[in-house]
Image (cartoon, rainbow, N blue to C red):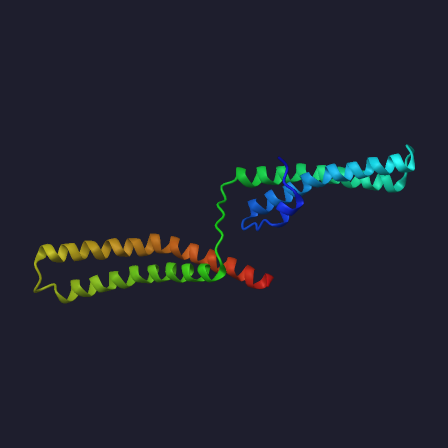
Length: 168
């Protein structure tokens, strides 16, 4: 069943795909009424060609072409590897801050283990020192690898937030 215009107007798309859905539904609803109006005018005016009737019919054809183009856009968007997440700007800022904070915590924890390793080297059990050294090393690797990944995502969130601010 095709949605009514009132149903379409009440929708609140949050993602690009939902916006495509809404626009595609709208475009698919306008062709029928335009063609009906065109046919009614053609009966009233007569069967000949009229510029106004040609214009009205052209709009209906444009709607059909737009529906096809939207289908192509959707196919291209869903064929890729993009994942879309919708966040309110304050949530994105908090998430970006948290990602950067986790990255800092990796480094700080590694520094704390290094301090323990240096200051307790003479008094500490060799097994405990080995555990501290391994923990420090694991945290340094996590800071280098996982921290870089977190920083990348934080940068993407920040950039997306800047686009939002620029648009406002």
